Length: 400
Image (cartoon, rainbow, N blue to C red; front, side, top):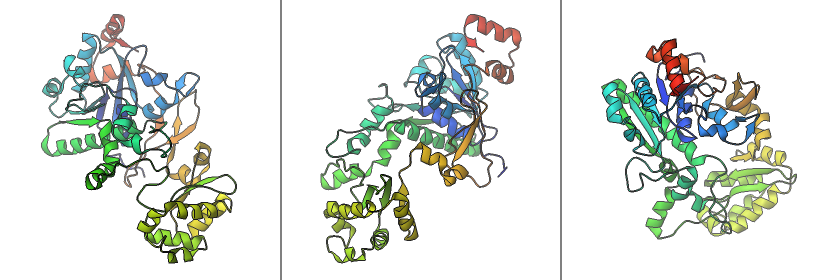
């Protein structure tokens, strides 16, 4: 498709750092927005210091910020805050991830920004949100993953509560922030008014694990850790094949369970009252899991997956990075090229999280250096000439 992307013409000023807010910025850029990323001169976004790295380039920063324009402005200085206020007046969206109250203390609260730009959408991502008793607490993804209840139910009964080894809460919060931004932009089209989008890191994740909260109220039972199962359907899990490869099977409804037992050559399993229904299988989960595990362990992974696909059983290989890069489906649909970077060369990374039939996909044309686009943006948006821009650099307000 070569159609115009839906957010073409939308300009975003990204004041966020680290993970969640830059994820929101990337989501918006993926669908056409021009994202201007404001970073501290010299150090830049702290995500530039993350590992893993290659020749000093942080790979996580590259994935979230490719194709954005970087402007280096010192927000600790009054002149820097004045620049940001003026830039916000020329933008449709400001995305920020400071602790609640910081923008207000800097004289950049929504009342101030809205006075200059009544249609501005201010998207705010913070640990605990802009309201509530915890609003002033700092928060990163780990705090959201534990506070939301996710870590408590993640893992096995014999292991401690476990947070994921990646930015899970941050990523979900960033996607939610992008969704809220898009909704606010749509509302602005109808009313002309801007809005404030308030995203707490923990809330999208708490929504995902919300069944455990209802379960406690309905039964008094506190959900624990169940490993690779769900605690609600059986058989479901991750299994090792004869060649050491791993795969998942999700027989999450009765029809799929019946297909699985047929694929195993064991339709008789359904005649056993212990396994005839999902409720019965959950009561005898260890026994039915042993049956499935033994069958998977009897053949190489590719053979098992072929049989499962033939019988339309929901299943997948457990992929590592090498598997993903070799997979023709992912290469055609999901992986996109990151170009224009001498350190990484031509590499693939996951592209947009959804596809629009009438919209062209984005290009990821390089990772910006700190302040690489400062002069360009200050000229384009504020009309500052060479002398004015040089004066700001001399004062240490900006850096190119």
